[in-house]
Length: 236
Image 1 (spheres, one colour):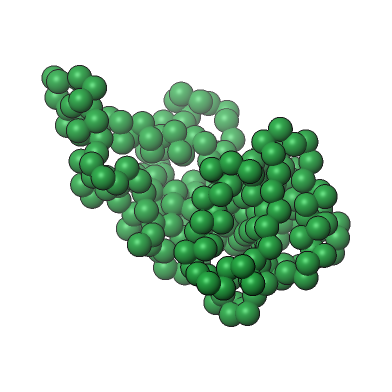
Image 2: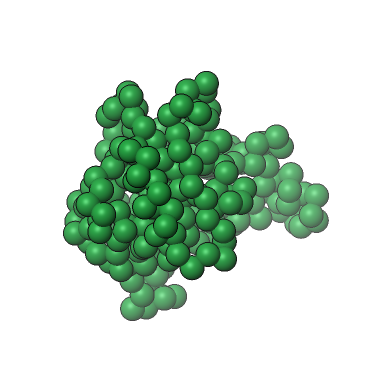
């Protein structure tokens, strides 16, 4: 956002939970003392059926950048309402609500053009991975165990990646499957390559750092699919 507009006025819509507050914490890390003057927040409860009121309120503040951290059903509402209001902010959607079939199609593909998000997984429909062996193996796995399912559903890639890591943990554990040893191995993964992670991203954990993936790449929706751009971003 700041690269596009160093003086951006930022709105953040988030759930009133630790999940939502993690995003405001990230923005505070970047903006520091400027956060209070730069950011306007709007919250919703996990049980809320609508977030349209919050979208209207945020637009009225005059901000020109919106970070929406919502569950998929509310993300559909957010995209629709922003479009209905004729609002054209720099619009970031959190990763879990970036699914084309589950969110963007329902919100309207035309309404979603230009939407920004991030990813650390390979999109099996990305032409860049047409000849990628990891994607080929993943397609074969999906065809065998989930025939006829929509390749665009990111949960299938996430699940496969998680299972791949679990297999590695079990291999490292050997014959000792005690909880203590499983935790020891799970927190000692070193440069593990997972076939459906983006090139350059590897899994690393330690006894003091459980975050297995700490890199991502930005992407923009072009009306048909997400298009990745820029270099990998590192969480330092």
